[in-house]
Figure 1 (cartoon, rainbow, N blue to C red):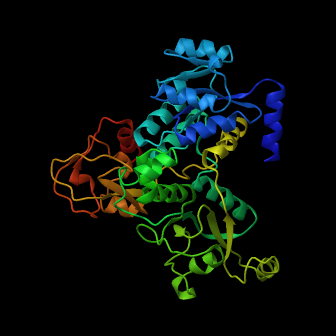
Figure 2: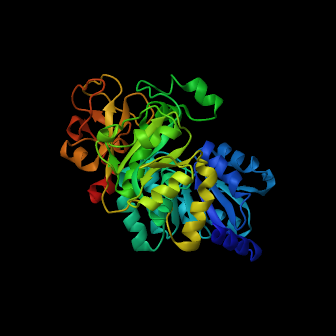
Figure 3: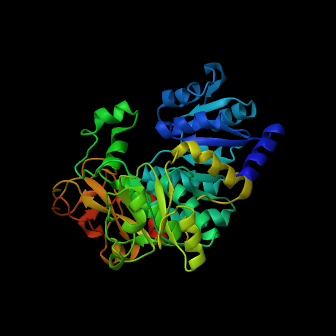
Length: 427
């Protein structure tokens, strides 16, 4: 971290900041813009949203005068404004990736197909791409990562999101010689599979969240997406479909996440999961093969072993994204990315209500479907549908019962989307 901080200060002193564009001006996007204003050697130069008023607010909340904000309708105007060191806003998404002076693009939309389009455009325009949008990553991350490597740019998830926070602990544990047995995240509310934007609207608006975003947290889809990103970046898999999701506390995590024959809940090690009662933290369960290591861990009050928990009691979502921006721009390295050219885990689709033949679906956090998790191989074997491919043009081909897992042959997908086309190439 010292190396990053030192280099950013040098960029600031030499007036050569990393110029960043952000797509999405909701809670995460606005938070990122404000945080970037406080980071040396980095500037939130361009903010994009289909609601111009949100982009302007993102800058004014960060202390930027309205006179210093340029509303641009074409790429020429954007490039000129950036050369004049103006803060620029637009409602045309593609300009985020095409503006000449932009070094790094951040996707903060959370919409799977939009994320696929932004990431691909960024890569083709030789920009590093930071994905707060892991909803897209868990569908087509491997192919986007490979395309980025081919183009000499970085494709990465973000520090601060649970998968990025877990990966940092895993990297630490492995670098110090521990054996990693399990990893996961806390969940701060019980799963309600029936949650919809309407049922959570009041609470969402209090938190200045889109209702469908909060609904995706409450119905568990977001948790499944985050676990899938952990799996795809490490090779670890869900122990059971949907995960165990026990209720526990931090002290008991090592016992809970041990094998059944050792008094725990696991069928196997090298798994990802989630737990109630430890949010907003993330955890990694480790052990060692050598007795002296166990002796020192006991001396350090890490427990009696043989398993121990490395726990981080917070994750700061988009407020930590500057770290990922810096790692990409300065060192050409990701914070978290798929480890191979195919997925390890899949976020599969389940019916939230009874569905009728001819009905159209919607998407993550809405009224008709929610996500669960299984291994990619199991999902492929059963022809299960990734939830990130579902949109409002998806048509049900036969009646589907509430709670039923949806397969490819139960629906007619929208094959015009970029995420569908990339997924076909990836598969």
